[in-house]
Length: 153
Image (cartoon, rainbow, N blue to C red):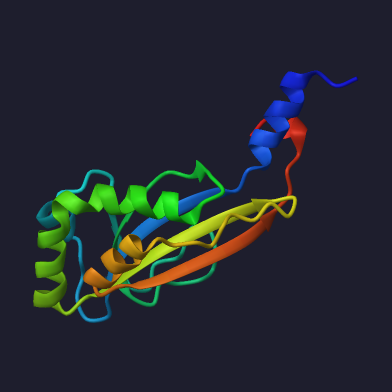
C-alpha cells in the first residue's frame, strides 16, 4: 500500500500552477526607464526583436513586465487578486505612464494543468473592474503538462 504522505504529495503536485503577470508594451519606444519610474522590484524589460526565452520566436514589441512566481491554485481569481494587490501601490504611476506614453496594458494568467485538473476560470467582479481600470486586456492560457512523481516537482 502507498504511503499517505506520497499520495498527499502527488495530489499537491497535480494542482494546477498559475503565473499572473502584468505587461506594458510599445511598438515605438523602449521601456527600460519604466523599471526606475514605476519602482516595482522584480520588473523586467525587453526590446523588440529579442528572442523569447530559448526559442526562435522574436518579440514583436518593446515591453515592461511584472510577474508573480508560479503558485499552486484551483482559482485563477486568487492569482489575479495577488497581482492586483502587488500593483496597487503603483497604480497611479502606471496609469500616468500608460497614458503619457500611449502604452498598451495586458494582464496574463498562464496555467500549467496536470492530469485534467483545470482551475476555475471564475474572475470576481472587483478584479474585472480593476483590470478595466488599467484599460488592460486579459489573456488566460492553459498548457497541459505531464506530472512525473519521480521528478519531485
